[in-house]
Length: 111
Length: 112
Figure (tube, rainbow over the protein chains, first blue to last red):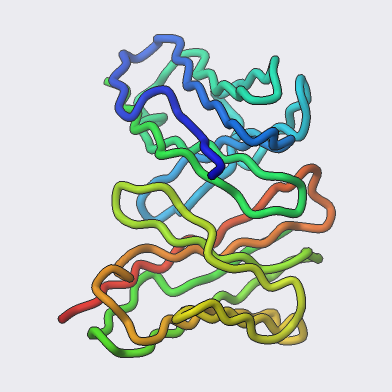
């Protein structure tokens, strides 16, 4: 089974902190994604990557950056956390043309 | 651009049939996918329609009609464990990689 592992299930950070969310997949997928999920707003794409060191902005990239130095790892960075970034963050991976496999999510609270 | 509309919530009893519609406005896409997400869990892939017509997987079926800009997920013989949120998604033709755009999700509540 494909596994997508997110490093933390729950995180609490302070406003202004730099926050790193880590995601690792074990099936050699070329594509990796970061979504945030908020009640009533569904899944919104923050950033995605279709190859090592390649990244593209999604629909809501402001306040975020990403890093993909290795194929299996895709990191989401909140440069200066703000309360409006309190959310559930979901990482996913896939082959091109294939369905997504999601991680279990990281519930981030910024206080 | 892409926009997918789903009802926000559906309630039904065990054993019933539920149809979750997904209407979309998009400039072109490869196919329509459906994902299931239980409360507190990760979304999981359910089905994919590349072509028009019906795809059946056990109690769940999915349908696509490109000419009508419409698709649906059909849940039959509802069970309590089917209580979850269901998302439709499309992969735009012009998108790099395997980017999906998701609908807002439909929360299905199954009652005894």
